[in-house]
Length: 524
Image (cartoon, rainbow, N blue to C red):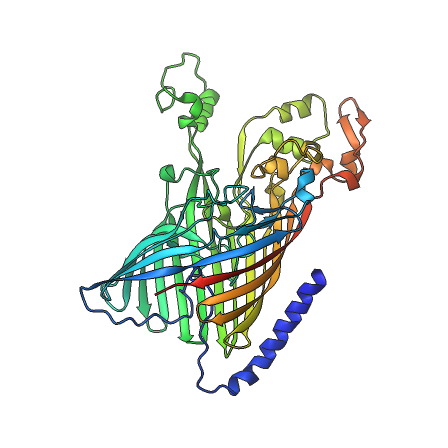
């Protein structure tokens, strides 16, 4: 598959060079975007619809599609930590025997149903839902509707636009084209998704300036990492779009917040008690005890945020789009990416380090340290997708994305002794990094093609390769893997058998996925 990727890349490069020549033969013909679905944000290069509306008149427009596809993967793939073929984001590390078995299914759940309500040219409201529940390992007929967008916008003038509700994130607003409409390439280069926001756009010539405040919520992971209702600060995002022509679009954005990740004064162990520090006077109070008590009742916060730049370029029948983002704790403020903040203790950090084999009084004291420690992974991520319409009926494209943690030393590793490689009778949820190991890098690349027999009907084929790198505990790497224990004071220790490497679960997982299906757009 690696060679196949380079073939696709060479083909795209050839088309990039050839396409200006093709464009010269199609004078005056403007390329129109063909997403194939209405699931992809149209904040980029696409023209606004010029609907004839009367001031004060309310009009309704139905949006959506019915999409069904057959999905096959030769090994287990994950959707935000859960085995799921509908919205895969990474390849699953093989912690169980069943993880290496192929799996397949037919899924109509990523179909879309929505309505757009227009109030003249001054306002519009959007209600949009699909039927995907990526929190289930088996997405079937019992899946409930899921809100994708629910917002309204108000235009007091032609230059100003207010928007309020849940819509596409102001941060990182370019999206790759993919028929995997539930997850795009989340975790593989694409950071933007959806967010509850209140924001403003201002048009200044060819430049469009935007800003918004929003929540730090997840929309895919049921294991909440931050309580968004009690978070001390909303996200603050700014963005600038530049569209000098109908063929080119450039955007840059930034987002930031302070995450509250710990609040000992409202710990569940104190349920039924006063939610404040112990105010009783201690006759034996010391300075060190007072400082300890103060620290215990403090709220822990982490600086989180990122920056991004992206583009869309069209020439004739060729289109390319890409984006690069960099930030800290990105997954803790978006629903995509691979960089959530890490929570561990000083004792766990020492035990999992290369010095974890040390024994004796010093190491025992270090390993018994239960003070919490919060780490902030930094993530560099990006994607590129290239698309070419051979004709009105046929088109193809390639896409690739990668996300990489630039400070992997702060990640939580998995002890291979805890991996249940031969336990098919016990199911392991994979959202716990102490079982799987935190993801330190994720790569996705693939090829897709479509055939449109009618204007609103499309059949498609898409292939994807997911390659995911998980972190192992450093204690079991290199020479230290052979040392059972060692007391530096007594200068005594014992060896251990590290086991056969070929029998251990690999820290690298790779899965091939194929999607074959069709869709019917019924936008009015």
